[in-house]
Image 1 (cartoon, rainbow, N blue to C red):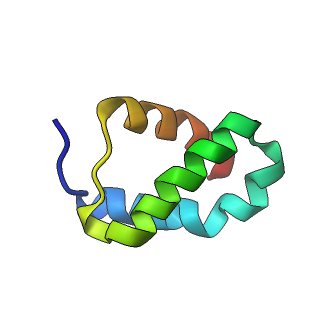
Image 2 (cartoon, rainbow, N blue to C red):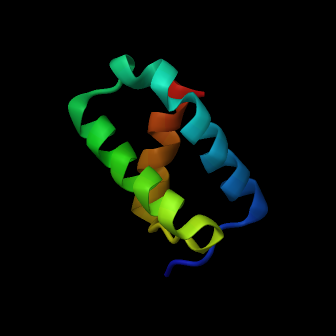
Length: 67
C-alpha cells in the first residue's frame, strides 16, 4: 500500500533532485530511466508522490551513488 511522503522523504527526494546531475554519468542506463520517472513524478505531485515498497528499495540503492 502506498501513502503520501513524509517530510523527511520529501527532503530526501529534494536532495536527490539537486545532486543527481553530479552522479548522472555514474548511473547505469536503467538507473537513469528509473530516476527520470521517479523525479518526474516527484516534480508533478510533490508531497502527494506515492511510491511502492519496491520503488523505495531501488531508490535507496541508487541514492547511494547520488548522495
